Length: 202
Length: 207
Image (spheres, helix red, strand yellow):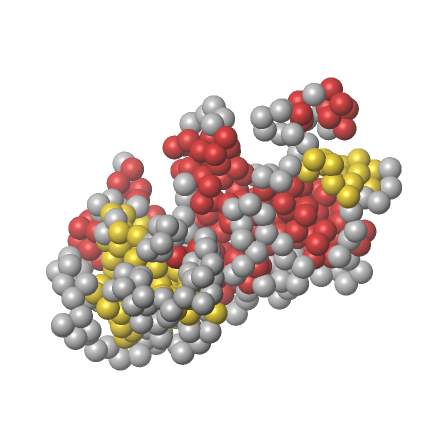
């Protein structure tokens, strides 16, 4: 998975919060410290495998809920509360992905060698999970599974919709617009969600 | 002193504990051995609640069952501000979401009892119902957020938020994460920040 994948709307990950995301069956989490930078990590504490998305943010550090192991923005472990005098070895690290924010979305990549896409600032509309395979969702919306964005004409606007594969039968959309009526665009996308899911159930 | 017949792992008892703590009401608890003792099905408990369900709340001679009814009683009797159960145009909406919290959202409780306590039942069916309810709540909270609102009804937290929070937060026990529900993820953080918030096993007090 070398390409950049949009996995959330930036709006939905404000400072101090954690957010769990499933990306192509992998458990991933996003968190944002006071420095405002979104971090995208594997959703596992390397100590005991606890989901880091259940942890809590303090300042610019993420704390695991289970034993309080604290990780900095560089994914290195800063502190182990049970051993307060220990200088934590640099080999103890969370598994971080490359992360970027552009177009009002949080993006991740396994391969940070390629630069992230450059998009203008876009207004967040809605993130929607759809219980339908990505191939079918993108065919319906006129997108391509080879591209991370779908351009969907709506009213006088063109929605820029990032998408990621949750698993073989579930897709998550992250819709943005340049000047969209957010309420109307949201209702439009929910109607598309319903049509797609009913089509699968039929 | 008011008395709550309580089971520490019950999300419905937790609804009552949350509001008691947020309103600063002194109360005592009587632990009921729900599992494995099934004390809620014994004659002594059935005399209090013939439905054989937790919680039961005793207050000045009143004996109440149903978490949603108890929340209404607490707000009506102890909240001088009127914030938690507003007696204006918001009232009907609060009652509507209370019914949802005691109705559709309880599919999470059913799924959790199967997943956690090995109760008999169809886990997949209850999980699907739970996901339908969670999506409905997430859509509503996303609409509220787009309108600048943080809470289920109106500009302040109400007992609709308190009744909905526990089983949303406990859905992990039922095998349902919050990955599909970004608006719920933001809302539940606001609930955790309320003065008097307390956790329970499975719902950390940290946030």
